[in-house]
Length: 536
Ligand code: GLC
Image 1 (tube, rainbow, N blue to C red):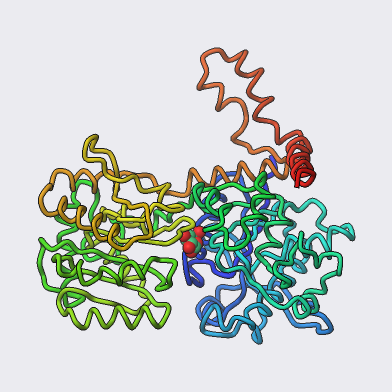
Image 2 (tube, protein in one colour):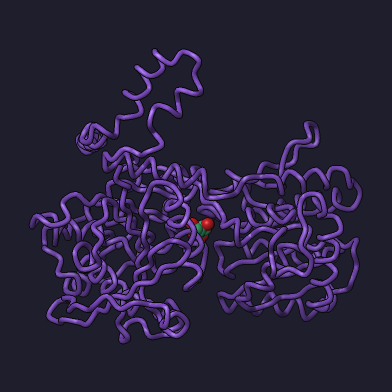
């Protein structure tokens, strides 16, 4: 049976380049899909660092001239196989030969216009891969479903390519002057409409992705719901409401090969659910020494590893940081970001030697040691599409304190002192003292109720945060929008579950094979779509 062919397009992909969680997702999900019955490949820009590090392993597939308005620009295509997955790289030194992934806002708009056009030009014969699904991620790829429609499908090319657009963060939308983008992308006038890609008289890449893709996903069910509301909708809530029929939330996983305290070479002492007491104590001591904190096994060590931006709730943290330190907590922050937060955190750390460390850095080795050595992990995010750090921290037996939003709400169940249930702590409102009180409560349990704390650690460490389940959900979605059935969905598997095979067999295939009837799934989506349009 043919595998479903999926091409992931993303501006960041681990381990090649990473700025945030987007890279982790696009680095891990295709690899997991390839273990099953999907042929998933990935295409990203060939940034300077990738070129330097991986050049020798890459194969040059060829080059093309890509149109950008009146210009024709060189685009090279390279290929590399890693983790049984094929990665393609788009080369153009004028656009991508920089140390950083993102360079400057307006230039980034141009750089990703070029990238999107190059990907679409390479797709098919040139890269010897015509996907059934083009899976776009965030604004940097948001125009592709529209371009596919305007430049290709209309002219009879790539007519069977379906598109998925995943929102990892609705806040960054790729907004720029209509005239400029129209020229770079050669956009036909009929696409420059409010109901398509225009928002507040400017082109909005994120909006185009939502409107033109066959399916929109976001990275947790709660965020999928939240983004339809005024507060979280970032101005696109009405667009998302209009297309709600094709929006769903699929929770991210984490790369369990990279984040496994039993096998992690980056941490001082490896441990598992049986040996965590000794293991975590050793990691904590080592972390305290490494960061110049007072070596004190009893002090609750609270950590945060994050981009230092307002989304992450840093204002809440800064508001109560002194009170936390006064309470005897040790605080470790690792990350880079807005100057204001960097300076404020460093200032507080300087005022509190031995108690707090602000590491303004992007250091994966230190990150692993913090996940292992900390007792409590703080994520007071204002919004959090999914959040990966809370999953990593739980896998390492570090108990999260989170705000109840997005993926944090979906993955952290607050400790219930009556039933003993829970794997962390949470608070509801964007209120610094709520955050402080919950963290203090966690510290009290840490200090005085070892039995409770051990249970929290064990519950966290025994959770399944792998990509398996989510990869299956994505595969199901690809199957639904393409009409290509998945191998697994054959009746034998189901038949085992049910004792009466005859009836079960007669019913199940019909239900499960819905995608096989190619257009029926599509039609129903389309039908729903029409209905929505009519009611609006
Ligand atoms: C973004 C979001 C984060 C999510 C990640 C991967 O970085 O802020 O919540 O986990 O994308 O989807």
